[in-house]
Image (cartoon, rainbow, N blue to C red; front, side, top):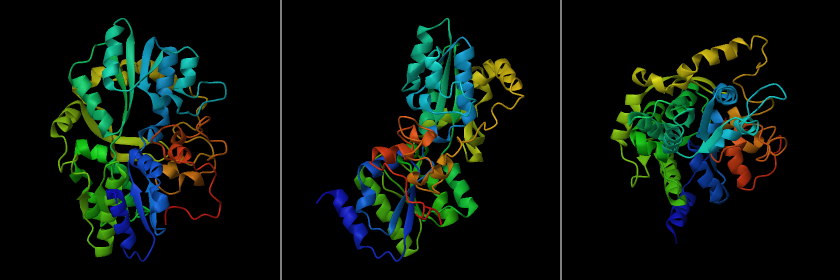
Length: 380
């Protein structure tokens, strides 16, 4: 019997008197859960909920819009992680809705996989302004900070759209309508920031929690730990990924991150502003800020929009329920557009674009139909 089978058998032996909802914060966790078919083998009383763990899904629509307009109308090379190229924004019919469409219209846009590629592009194009549209969570922002700290060339700037993961969970818990009974904390983020960053979930809110890795064994161990905590009435933070995650994380990476970046209130697409949830560049690194270098153009861009052509700026597209999916309020296939207007080949909302988006993951896992309208929502 494999380790995964052992953990599954332990879970099945637990006496669970009611339906218990376990939220995972990481898109990588949701992909591992779906691809391994864990929902189909767990007891029906356990409900696994995808949460706000997709940086592409919550990236502010206006940041993507700025990137598109800079690429179209300034003499620059714009770099972005591949998933960002297909995320749609709200613009009048006939205008470029995504970086992919802007690239097809002639803009110099290149997908990259790491900040080091941004350094390479800037170094090989010394006569061009290069803008790196950097969206992501702490695990992405740390190498972006290291790139700038090491000394980036003067022709490279960053259009920063970085977010911290824990404030979104804190916001849900503060609301009193979190919709989950236990939390699986993100293994990759905890590798950098430390497991203790998630201690507040159990300490302040009495919610069972565990840090887990990305194998079925680690995830099932995390589920079992959370269920036992609930059963015993003793919520705590359990590190079920100790081979990679330490209590305090990568202290050197954190030092570089906060040397280069500060924390501010920030907007999450479709969700709104979450306190202390975003990254911005420290004053000593502001010369790498694309919003400052191209400030005059961006100011004119929004001044020219006095007719309100972007009335839905910052919001999800009409009919799209991605924000509710991100917050764990509904399952992906409970979105009104899922498998109808919104599919991977023609995504309407960002959750169907990224490999870390719950809608895209569920589709890849074989869920190809919208849930019945009478199905209860995920949240209470």
